Image: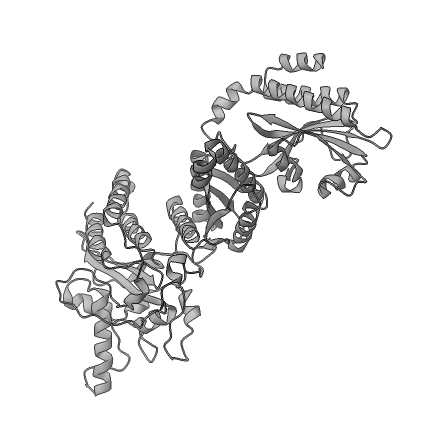
Amino acid sequence: MTAFAKSMAAAHSVEDVIRIAAREAQRDLRAAVASISVWERATGRLRVLANHGRLAPGESAFPKDESYPVSDFPAILLSEDDLGPWIQVADDEYGDPKRVAMLRRRNRHCALIAPIVFNGRAWGELLAARTVDQPTYDREDVDFAAALTAQIAAGLAKADHVRQIERLAYTDQLTGLANRRSFDARLDAAIDRHTADGTVVSLIVCDVNGLKRMNDGHGHDHGDALLVQLAGVMSAAAAMLPGSLAARLGGDEFCVLIEGYGADDAVRVAEELCNLALTVRGGEGVACGVASTGDRIGDVTTRDRLFRLADAAQYRAKRSRSLHPVVAGRGQPPDAAVLAVPSLRPAPLVGVAMGAGTAGQVSTVPDRRAFRGRIGIAVESLLAEAFAALDAEAGRGEGAATVDRVEIVADVVARGLDAASWYIYRKQDPSDVLSVARYSVYRTPAEPGETGDDELDSVAFAQQPVGPEFFAGLDEVLMASGGYLELAELVAADRERERDTESGREDVAPGDAVLGVGGDLPSGAARLAAAGYTGALTIGTTAPDKSHWLVVVLLDAISRPPAPAAPVLRALLAAALLR
């Protein structure tokens, strides 16, 4: 032991510690081979750094890329609870099955596995293995291995000082996961790849349930211990899809960033993450939201867009007390506050006629019982959030595009209302065709409406973007009025045209709807109702450069009361276009 301690003291770098530790441990533990591995928490993998002794075919002294999902070796996760060293025998039915299989494959009889505990958590492990011609390890060997790993940890503490300072900027010190700075850089790079070649990027955002109760009832030390255990869950979840990154964003918020896998793969990881979180001692699970560019959520060109979608999904999971992930762009359960409301079925869309000078209004009148008992938006905080975001966007200078500022407005108001989706429509001048500039789908509506129209597949429609065809005839109306009309006026005009058609007026062609798709198909308003939407908050205006803009925020039965948001949206849109 004295020789081992002296060797550790002589090491000047982490690489020296690892190399010397493998060599000395192989000798002192009389092993056929000794290995040092590190637990990379951000990726959830156990990476072999050094092997020393009689190597099996395929093994190397310093592997370039030998790593395994930490979930393959769940015993190391238990080392967070001070499990200490243990013995694994190849012909034993207990233990980690994949560890047993590896011993057999390499013709080794038993292994002594000792976690290396550094800075209060499992840094990695020392593994010493023997072949069939050597005796099985015993209790005395276990105690000796514990002493060796303590010396390795001391060597790492001495040699890792400079490296640790460099790592501070990118690692969360409590959990060992990537921190917010590291996560933002990685997400930026992922979004760049998505923009360049369509790589699917998915984000899982989790909020810890019950952390405040833990802190208040048992103290922050217990709360920190819970966070460390949940960090292990995040790391194991990230390992399910190699290359994924687990991070702690701060406080009780964690996330997993996934690149190059389908949206369903990300949802599968999120489901497993929720299940694992429920097994953590003293915990109450996590609220989990998922957003993936592989789903129909709208164009994602910035990290903020994807994060806001995942965060909004997480927020809905929190409010609904869901034990399963909530996925942006997909159907979701109503939250607990809505379950007690007597009637939540979306009311038919009702047109509201307005004067030309009327500010933006809710273009449909949902059954007010659907909002009974719901909490309205906090106008002051919503304005503060939006103006702060607009100021930050303005700081980008020439790189700040008008559509980016309008997106900020649409997103802030939509999240404040817990809306189902938002759309930005634009035309550069009166001769252009109206087009969707951007849109974002937080969820499909809570439940389809009823129209009695057999031709209408409301569920399928709810999963499709609301395109400009819903505003057939809008160009003509704009040219006549000199600017965008409120959507409510278009709905009212649509109904009025239907009545005129039925009464036989000769100047109105059948199916010629202002808000609709023309022909014999149901109007856009009817289709929105059939999809489960209960209302649309709309604002249209003209920018200083004469471009026309229309922002539509679609609501469903579980959205907040929309009334206070109309003047807010108008003010914010004006501010966005003038900056």
